[in-house]
Length: 365
Image (tube, rainbow, N blue to C red; front, side, top):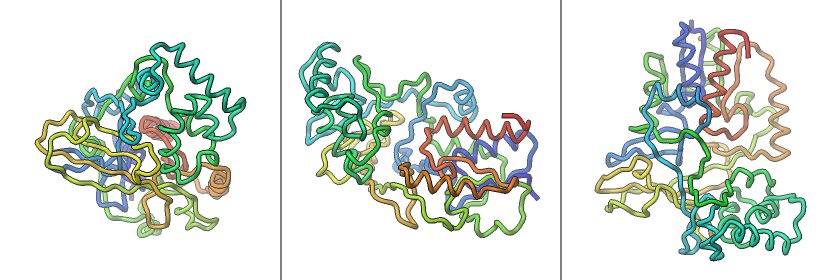
């Protein structure tokens, strides 16, 4: 008999398991996949730690979270500075003075702001009601047309005027020559890859891989279940399916030491079928003779696919709320991006797992 059966060996489940084990609780972790680490999992190819499920860069302003993860990994100084490729034209991301200079030839922040204001007025936008209008208000029509429109349509599978303005608000806009994508105090990649981090988080904890929750849920293995999977799946889709966007990767080894000169290059035109190319070695400043790249394709999720991004529109959020009302048992704790049906950065996931564990142990928030 275990104190906790934790369903999912991803970030939320692994952090929760570590805290509980260190507090003297007996824990069992299961995962239906053949590996630990969830979507953060990295595997070695040609001596390069490949981000199997897409780029993961840890960044946070939360000192407690940073201190916690550094107990189990050393982080390098990687700074996320992606490049946008529009039909062979290269632009700096996030949107900053390098971007504005390349697009319009402006050299001062005032000139850039004036150009954006001019294009916003031309579009007649006062109160943005969709992503297209929000984007033009933030960075002008030229940047929207070249660097946002095509990429976003590929990413979400919907026209920009059908998407909520909140999506684009996540993207930084800076009137400085700062191309650090994340405005975070702490940032980096675990030295040796994320899998090494998870191996240390789960050290000394019983983990059963290739084990679906449905196959053990009636065995009464633990006093309490911590469920990090999809909420609609837990309830056997009784109210219907929540929708996601998912991602497919085409990964190949190239006989060159440097394919694109950067870890991440976004392809922002609508004709290129993939959204970006990841060159994994540059996450850890690799000097290997070969390189590994992954082309990333975004498409609509269907049953059997790996869900990546919740579609947090009105319909899906309402359905998730209905599922949440079915949660009645005190013996099941739900947590993580899948159970909460929200896109979380990694540091937020860690924080939520730490807070949930603390509440379990003390009874206090």
